[in-house]
Amino acid sequence: MKKTTTTRTKKNAVPQIRVMIVDDHPLFRAGLRRVVEMEEDLQIVGEAINGQEALDKARELNPQVILLDINLPILNGLQVARELTASNHEIAIIILTAYHDDEQMLHAIRAGASAYFPKDVDAQELIKAIHQASQGNYVLNDAVLAKPQVATWLLNQFEQMQVTGSENSEFAFQPLSTREMEILACITRGQSNKEIAQQLGISRQTVKNHMTSILRKLAVNDRTQAAVYALRRGWIRLQDAR
Image 1 (cartoon, rainbow, N blue to C red):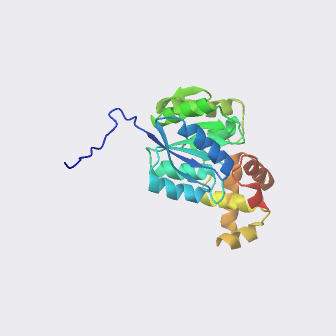
Image 2: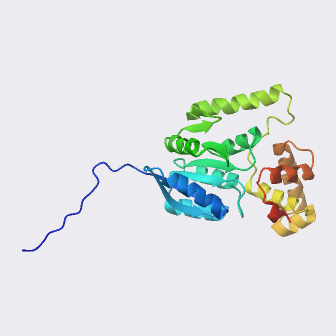
Image 3: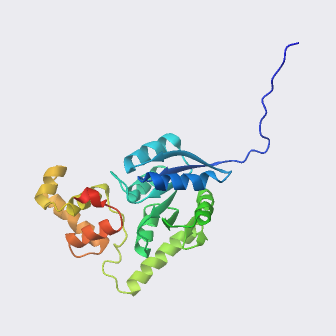
């Protein structure tokens, strides 16, 4: 008698949230992977080690949530977040950073992040944030917010800046454009306006115009302060500035 085989399917299979990890440190990626894979309803679909690879793999693998470092080669995490959320409103990004302060959080949310944590975040806190972000919510300072609430939160932050008399508060935390980020990277390497113009194939006047915009957006007084601001927050990698 011929034997027949049957394929069993899980009747109560748990829907899985597709997660991608972006960080250039192998040990940190491995740690995140272990934490995520312990959860039955979370699935790691891919990893990336730099900003450009993150963009390419996100478009290919279509993750629901990305765990994204800020301090990355080629493109930093804020640039990646801005580009991905502009083209895919369904994707949720959780920013992880070694430099944690309120200004960095504002930059992350303005770039499109759904949550923001220092890298020493508690594992269970991160897992909860992944679930919330996948549902379209935001996690800020231990609070879970819907999108309208985040808009109100941002407005309150800007109003507080104006009350405290911060200079250029109407421009503060506006995202730097791709070109401005390129010029900021050149500044951290100590290049002059002439050298930047030659490298990027633009006029010196265009470089000056971008510099004015960068200083205004970062609310700093000169290019040295702009370079320090970017390096401290991991927008430009220290090794790339040498």
